[in-house]
Every structure is written in C-alpha cells, then in structure tokens.
Amino acid sequence: MKKLKVTRDYVLNEILKDYNDKYNLKDVWEISDDEIIRREAIIFKVKSQYHKKHIAIKIYTNHQAIVRKQYQAFKHYFENMDDIYTVPEPYGYLLESGALVTEWIDYKGTDKQLWGFNMDFDARSEFVANIGKWLRKFHACSEITIQEYSSKSVIRKIDNMMAKVSGFNKLYISLASFKRAYNKIIEYNNKFEGLELEYIDIHGDFTPSNLLAGDKYVGIDFNQNIEAPAIFDIARFLIYLDVYRKFLTKGSSLSRYGCNERDFKAFISGYGEYDKNVTPEFFYYIQLCEVLRRFTSLCIGRKPKGIKRIYRLVELYRVGRMAKYLLIALDKFKNK
Image (cartoon, rainbow, N blue to C red; front, side, top):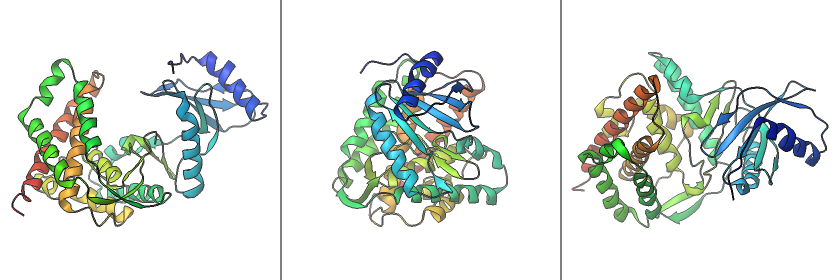
C-alpha cells in the first residue's frame, strides 16, 4: 500500500469528516498542537469545539491495513485492564485512511521521568515497581500457552538491522566485543532451540517511551503485539532502565542481574514471578539479545544533533558495557 501524504488540512477536511460520518457525530474539530512524527505513523492532537476533551488521531502512513487490528487490540486491553494500569480508550478507526482515534493522554513518557530521581532511590524503586505492575496487567489479558522456543527469528532481526548500518557507524559493529557478543548469541541459539516456554501476547516494544505515567500508567504503541515469551518484554525494559539513570551501574550488578540490581528487584516486585523455565542462563542470553538489538538500532537511527548526540553516545557506551558484563555472566556457565 502506498505511503499517505498527511497534512493538517487532510486531517480536518477528510479524516475527521469521515469520522463524523461513520460514527454519526456533528462535531467541529481543531488541531491543537504540531503533529508528532513517528517511524510508522503521524499523530495529531485534536480538540472538539463542543467539549474540552482531546482525542488522538494516529495515522499509519505505510500500513493502513493494520489499523483495524490495532483498534481491536486497544479495545481488548482497555476493557480488561483497570483504571490505574491501562491503555488509551479507543473511540474508532477509519480503514481507508489508516486512522486510529483514541483518547489523548497528556502524560510524560516514563523515559523522561526516570532521569529525575537523582539520589531518591526509594521513589525510583516505587516508580519502577508500578511499571512492573502495568506489564503484569497487560500480560494477564491473554492466555498462556506452552510452546517450543525458536531462536531463528532472534538472530534474523539482528542480521536485518546490521545490514542497514552504514558509514562511520559500521565501526561500532566491527568491534571485537560486538562480534564476541554476536557469536555468543549464535552459540546459545542452538542450545536453547526447542526449550519449552510460556507464550503470551507480549507488547513487543515495551520501552520507557511507550509507557506514560501520571495519575495512572498508560501503555501505548503496541504495534508489535505478537505471541512470544513474556520474558522478551521484561528483558527489553530492564535494558532501558539501565540507560535512563544518571549514575553508572556497578559491573558486579550487571554481571549478576544483567542490569541494575535495585531496578531489577523493584521491577520484579511489581511484576511478580515469571516463567519458571526461564533459567538465569536463558535470562542472560535474552538480555544479551536485547542489548545487541538496541546497540544496532542506535547505529542505524538518524544522526542526532547537539545535546541529543551526546545522549546517543552515552547510550552506546552503556549498552556496550552491559554486553561486556552479560558475557562475563554467561561465561560462568561454560563448565556447568
């Protein structure tokens, strides 16, 4: 399907007119702020002239056909989660234009809030525990099935991302430490192929920027909502938790927990027990997969400018450091 050219006039004169017609509304709308441009969609904050409530118009520019599936997913989670740990309320969708209409959530992402705790470790731990509670509520909305783990897709995704790295950034993935981590994943892929694990409908991109927090915790952007081991969501968020902190985690903590010890314990205190078939060795392996995925994605992202470039370099360093200590953790299992 061809990529849509989305303008403010198109949203007001076409999409919102169609929305009024489909749902028998007589509303008059105005766009409140500048649009938010994401990789797969453009989001508009829209206000009704008849009431104060804002809505979000999310237009999928490349894959309009997924909008029905997204609406159904939002509806399912909104109805099955609770008032504190939730997702935006879905109002409708337009298949022809690929537009999803939901409640507008005026909260900051947890990525921005995680930076602000400084030395208040207890407040950060409580915040992280609530993030774990949100994920537990999300996972509880689907049935658990026992399936054999297939490692092929894991390395395929990393390979596909590596193929997109170009220019100076190729130096990063040519580093000996990166190659050692990559080879370790291939080694473990064979070891864990066929391992029986609990599969559920995971978020698929559970990162701090995709969870908003205020009076409640609201998850967004679960476009990659697929059936997979629950540990995938947990591992990804723990990696990001270690990035969004002002102080470096001790190496001893990284080699034992694959992340910051305090953050790990706080998150699990909120989430609760996870799949008993996930051994420490498998957990470190999945963490290492997530580290390489994140490292590679940083290498193919747009080159940031100014202060954002410094943040990018800091994250590259921290993610690379995590890989180093995860390899140390996995090496402990060599002779077992």
